[in-house]
Every structure is written in structure tokens, then in C-alpha cells.
Image 1 (tube, rainbow, N blue to C red):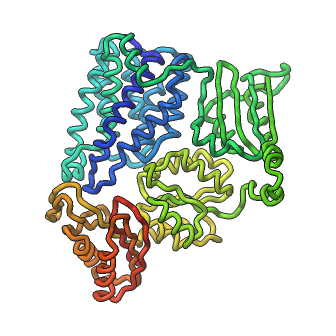
Image 2: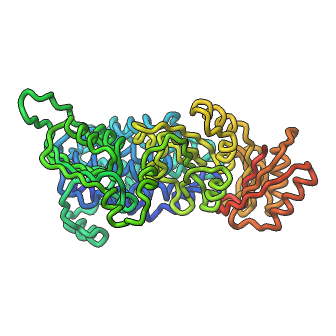
Image 3: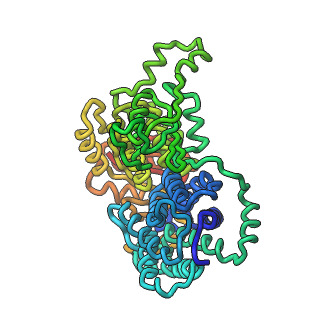
Length: 567
């Protein structure tokens, strides 16, 4: 096989996706930390499966068009840092493909891997070696050095599969925390598994057999359009009964009504999407040669027309007033009250991420947050999840507070997409109690610069302890022996106590954190399976030993039995 076309690339992505689906639980288990909170596998699975489902029928378009669609869907479905980095690796991989290109030669593949490395490293401000980034870097460099020795596509991907797992085995020697826990990097392993699936798709040796096997997994249909943006059922359900105007138009790019007309701007799909996102939602784009079709819900259709006319002229336009359609169906709804609520407010709205529905409701009642993204069932939120919440609060000023550093990249990408008409402040907490500490310091009437200072200071000064269960036996750098199944006390990612009894593990943790600086108040965030009697014993110790008041919150989180916040 000397080259890859759209159909073959699609099969390779399908096989790679299936490999991730088959192995995501094992990828989750490859924790740097001996706490069962690994989510790399589920993040990678959700990211790639979500993207694949959106493009699986696009097998009759050019490789260039397919790559653009796939990259966009992969980014929009990306969850957690691993999902976002994974999306950037494949965005980079397809970067060298030129417009109109139908096939990717084996001689071009080394440059694709190199571009994948460059794009993914640019997406991370402080790259860490011994991770998924290391895998793509070493692969790209070695393939570049050996590119003259490869004779076809299969040879390259055979090398990629074998070498990927060899590099994965090297990650513990590059990252001490991996070696201490006796594991390889989960993200790197996930990427290696995906590459393995890609190789198996072309190692079948018989194109017909490959198609037959695939048909058992994917129902084949003939695509009638080339969707280039968010088209998921969940997103459409949210905006199906929208307000404002439902608009559609077909525009011929670079077309002028008369010769003297102002020259049209060069069309760029990414820029075009961002311009349209700044004025509406429920966006779907269809591109066919020099024609672009747009569907969007907006309150300002004239701005939509201005954006479209920058690049060409209209062949067809349809604008329907959804608000009036709604009132025709719901005559009992007070018109003035509802119309007021549809405009973007100047009032600052707060969006937070939370580990459980219970904790989200607590924050809403105690701190007046506007809405929350519950990660209890879905894992780390996707970019799409953030966009939906941003549009839900209908405000020009939004503060987003995350409770997990794995969510940072998804939040930042969502903010970038919606920043044209909304002011954002992103606060990066690392756990639910740090996030609550930030909320305590929030001055809702203050400007964003002031709140950034207040809230970051609150996070930095917070002392947070956590209790979880160890899933392996190990010895820490400081000589603490941890038995599998023990309750472990954690502060700043370091295990500082271990005991088979949760009360003893908690007491030892509390003693070491308090030290000489006695706090005025201790918050206890109680997990789902934590016994109330054990909580009472811990509270009694704190009261009798230190005379400190405790405030208990029922969080019902699964991974961590207890969070302690010292204020």
C-alpha cells in the first residue's frame, strides 16, 4: 500500500477507536497516583468515539475535507487534558494535507508525524516528558530519521505500532512518579493502543475482508452532506426550541453581483465559524466546492448576513422568527417576561464544575452560583459541555471555576470560541474545596482583575487534605509503607498517612497538616460510602484535640472518601 485515501483513513480511525473502547478501563487503571480516579481512558474513549460517530459516513469526500471535519469534531468532543492533547496530535497529523488532496502518500507520512508533534507541544504551556507528548515526539523524530528506509504505508505503521509500545515502556524512567508507582504513562499507552488499531486496519491484507468486518460494526450509509461543525443530537436538543431567528443561507464564495463591488475576503472555515459563533448558536455548516450553507439561531440576523456577504453573495436566504412561533404554540406564556430573559445580561454569572449533583446543589444554595457542570457520570466535561452552559446563563460577564486541573484545556478552548462577545474569568482550582474557597472570596460587584487576585490568593492559601483508598501496595519516597486497600491521607499529591482504619488515617493526616498553624474552621466534604459514625469520631477528635469547629458537607463523591479544608 503506497498511499491512504479517505476510506482507508476512516477505517484506521474506526479500528483505533475500537481499541481504545476495549482497553479504556485498563488505561484508567494506569494511575501515577495509587488512587482510583484515573480517567485518561474514559476521556480518550469519549473524545475519539464522539468524533468518529460524527464523521463515520463521510467516506466519499476528499481527504482534505475529511481531515477538517474530523479535527473539528475531535476537538469539540475532547474531554480532559488527555482528550485535548489527543485531538491536537491528530490535528497536527493532518496539517500537511493540502486542499483538494485525495490521498496521503507513504512518503508524506513522516511529515505528518512531525506536524503532530509540533502541534501537540504548542497546545501545552509546560510539556512534561514521560507522557503522551514524549511518545509522539520520539516517534516523529525517529520516523524522520528513517524515512528513506520505508517502502510503503504498512511498513511505517508497523514501525509505529512496535516502537510506540517500546517508548511507553520507557516512560517510568523519564518520570519519577511513574517509576515510584510501578506504572507506565496512561496517555502514552492510550495513544499506542490507538496506533495499534490503525495498523491492524491496514494489516488485514485484503480490502474486501476489511470492508466485511467493518460492516458488522458500522452501518454504512451514503452521505448527503459534509457537516463541518457541531451536529450532535445533544446540542440540537438543547436549541431545538430556541428563540430569536432560525436562519439559513447558501452563499457562493468570491462571487460578486457586479464587477465594481468591494472585493470579497478570503474564506477561512475556522474564522468563519468563530464569527458566526459570536452572534448565535446551533450552528451547522456545509461546504461544497465554492458553496457554503449555514444554519444558525441568532437574535441578530443582519449580522449573520454581513458575515456571509464578506465572503460571497447569497443564492438563497431563509429567516424565520422562532420567538413568534413559540408564542403561537404557547399563548399562555407572559411575552414581556420571557423576552427580557432572552437577552444577554450585564450581571456576572458563575459556572462551576462539580464531582456530584449533590455538591452542585449545595454550592447553588450557599453561594448563588448560576449553574454547574456535573462530572459524576460523564467524567471530565467536553468543550461542548462548557459552550452549552455558557449559552445557558445568557450573560456578557462569566466566571468559570473548575475543580480539577484536567479540565483546564477544555475550559480554555470553550472560552476561546465564545470570547468575541463575552468577558470571561477562568479560575483554576484543583479540587472541590479549593473551588469553594475561591467562591468564598468572590466579590460579585468587583471587576475581574480584582476577583482574579482575591480568588487565586484564596486557592493558594488553602490547605486541603484528602482521604482515599490505595489500589496498590507501595513504599513512598519518604519511606511510608502503603498496603493495598489502606486508607491514605493526601496533601499536595503526597501520601502522608496510611492506615487500614479511615478514622486513624484521617487523624494522622489532620495532625500533620495542622502542625503549628491552628485553623479557625475545618470543612469536611463527606463521600458517598463514608460511614457517618466514622465522621462523628473524626469531628470529636478535632473538637477535643484542637477546639476547632467543624462544618460537614454531604458531597457523595466516589473517589475520595473525605476532603478536609483548613481555614
